[in-house]
Image 1 (tube, rainbow, N blue to C red):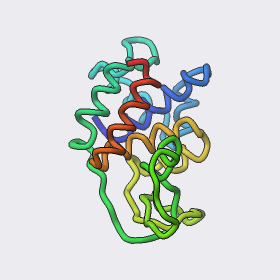
Image 2: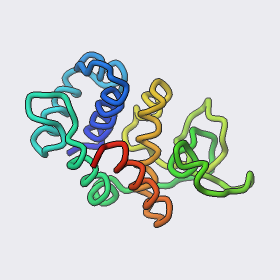
Image 3: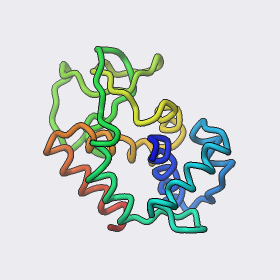
Length: 170
């Protein structure tokens, strides 16, 4: 498994949620990867049971199980300096309304020169994730929930797992 595989799985889920077609070319364009990278990623996801064999549909229970129990160990959240960026984790939808924070709190952000929020930089799951998230609100929410799980904070993690369970039908 590679980090880009999780981005692809979440993008596929986002497209399925929105009743859109899932194509390798579309996934490549939407995630900033090459079609060959997307194809290899889909194969890896099929091998581990996160994508249904021969069908570009996620297996919700398998995806959820990996996100909850394996993701933070395989792809831990790495924090950096203070900078401007895109909010993620508990600071982004759908979690931002669930937790109180003051305007002075430094929230987790993906580095982004066009970012509007000042916070603690966390490295995105994959380098093109912020670009892909700007294009797809649903994907952005999935990635923010994943970052909440990767952060290891119990309350945010629990709420993120609850929301992902509902969305993935697991």
